[in-house]
Amino acid sequence: MKRLLAALTLAAAPVFADGEPAGDFDYYVLALSWSPTWCALDGDDRQSPQCDDGRGLGFVLHGLWPQYERGWPAYCRTSVREATRGQTAAMSDIMGTAGSAWHQWKKHGRCSGLSASDYFDLARVAYDRVNRPSVLRDLGRAVTLPAAVVEEAFLEANPDLSRDQVTVTCRAGRVQEVRICLTRGLEPRRCGADVIRDCTMTDALLAPIR
Image: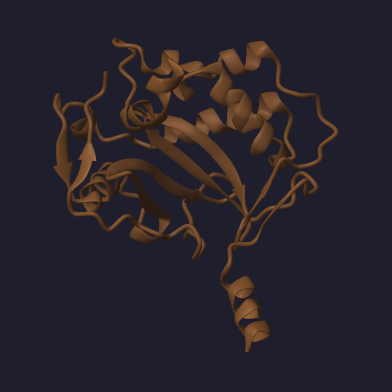
């Protein structure tokens, strides 16, 4: 019985690996993080410049993540040159900080099989193709709302997206991220089962931009 339970637990767990060969994946997840949430939970304690008053950051690019149909690769083996300081600094306008861009390259970008320059260019193209709803930026005050409202706002602002291509996550009672699934050619596609895990909160906190 113990062996059976262990086998079932392993079968239900997400499949991911570190150090896989670069370029071996099925699709991308474009992760858009609500900057005020990250700042409240992590960034303020780190004194991150992403959280400085006046930055005006709403949905920032958390990352463009290579994904398997089930699970994801990370810290892949690659022969391409590492990202430079100039390349990561150039992404801070949409990723918050150069440090965030460096971490995303190291953990996820290498797995794309692209050079750092091409990966960051592709990530920017993916980010620019998504309309971030202005109604969420313009709230001006903290509100609580069903997380599903955030998804609805993205679907309305991006008519080419469908519900099975978008998911909203929460953390510590707050709206955390919007994740959009894309083909390797950056076309919307259905998310894998381990990505479609919508936040079901009806009173998630959405803090205003700074």
